[in-house]
Image (cartoon, rainbow, N blue to C red; front, side, top):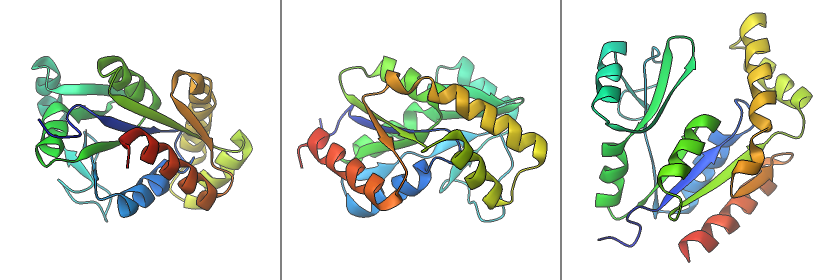
Length: 191
């Protein structure tokens, strides 16, 4: 059994809080980590590749995998849009003698923690404020007024769960947040 078997690092946050930027930074710093590719039923964006950014699955295939118990966690994040972490993906990373790094939503993060209570580390990335989060999401230019409001409302709700996680990092300055995450992971992995 490898050094990192069953160890999992979870990065979670409301959309727009910076979890993907911090995840990318951590992957560039720690060769011991491997990005856990989530499964999703949504259509890929123009720059996304199957098996690299996500495993893009048809809705029926996703539901079949749910029934088969193939997910460590899954959620219907938005109406008709499912996301999840395949157990086979975690095992692929452990078989490669690495520690999976999950970049997942808040509910999914809570589910993974419940399944791996002794061997997971969860880090919640908190935006400095809901207003700043709104500004960040607006600056992406990918949201309609309706979807922006839905994401902001969901973010405010998700922030209320921050105390369910092992560590909280307020991402007011990305470089500072990245260095805080590095220190937490060095301690968790003893490296």
